[in-house]
Amino acid sequence: MSDSTYTPPRVWKWDSESGGRFASINRPVAGPTHDKELPVGEHPFQLYSLATPNGVKVTILLEELLEKGITGAEYDAWLIRIQEGDQFGSGFVEVNPNSKIPAMVDQSVKPSLRLFESGSMMLYLAEKFGEFLPRDIVGRTETLNWLFWQMGSAPFLGGGFGHFYAYAPEKYEYPINRYTMEVKRQLDVLNRQLADNRYIAGNDYTIADMAIWPWYGALVKNRVYDAAEFLEAHTYTNVLRWADDIGARAAVKRGVMVNRTWGEPERQLHERHSASDFEDRTQDKLAAALGHS
Image (cartoon, rainbow, N blue to C red; front, side):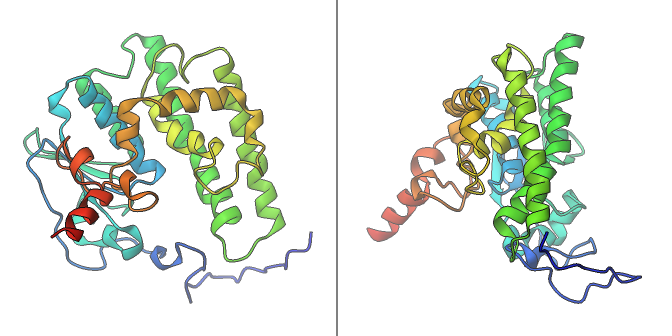
């Protein structure tokens, strides 16, 4: 191994930004950096997020609930620009003291209830509306097994592999090899599970699929980290079949657009306050309207 050796000091000090794409938003302390109230809309749920894999989990679930005609799941989705530090505003920190997206407030209960951590939010919504979480003990437990598998496994994919392979300012063989091995093992876990099951937890589409797909479905379809060839994603045929099945769902297609600020303008819906916004307020439509004003 040719990596230079680092000898840690006796006491670590934060002397400078750590480098990499997200260096400007990383810091070793919590709490707000500035005063800023969060906007509040009229719908039962107020979502403050960005269309990262963790953010997309929740918008997919909300759109799936609305697809079923559950009007109680109506929501306002407000854009949180994490690279500009919106997550460190006082209002956001009040909802999520961990300063990570997504964060949400349920206004349908009194007093209103804050929700943070995407897995917790998905479990709350599934239980509140009685959807996408089996009621029998076997199906429920299997779904939660895989929901929590995602919560525990994805940091190795994102903060580990994704950081060192795609975002770190310098490439080092040891961490890339270490996290590549783990991500391929995780893909093999999913591939084996999906060999005998249509969906992650069995024959039913659940919150486990919605949680895992934005991370691992995007990975094998080369939508994150540009690493599909490197990881030989084509060999995980069951994961690819499942990724395509989930991606074809109408609610999923809508969910991935919400709070998205990159890619094709027609696939970006910076904020969502009505079902009609998917037709009328995507970035291509807003740009065209400005051009004719």
